[in-house]
Length: 148
Image (cartoon, rainbow, N blue to C red; front, side, top):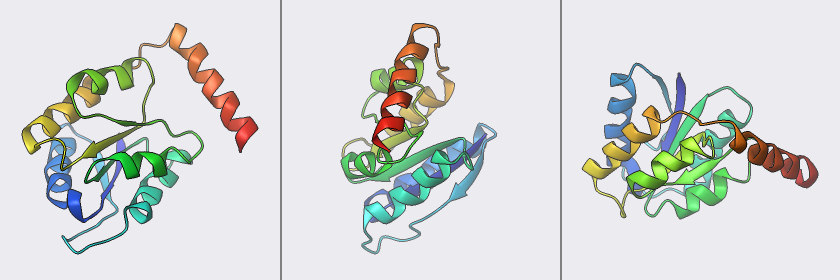
């Protein structure tokens, strides 16, 4: 699976760790930055990942900023994106199981590296349950059509 990943300066260290996990699971990774601790604006990086996921050039994405809130707001502005901010294992599992989330968002100042690795692994290993949740996703798609 092809993943797009990006972060702001607050997520730089965690991004490097997550890329390793993705590659260990056999995924291809497009690293869209940032590539240092130098201060940057998170919307610029959230847009890069969300735009690729939105048009299907990346199957899934991961975004990281200090709290994850800003990246979530940016990513969910894009059609076909279901970005979920997950700070613990239950929401990581449910975001895939019920919502078929295609972008995982993490707050590097909220979760530590070890927990973040567990969240990513849980998110990767949880399939979409389908069935009754497909009806709900269709409603989301219908909203997108009306709004966009």
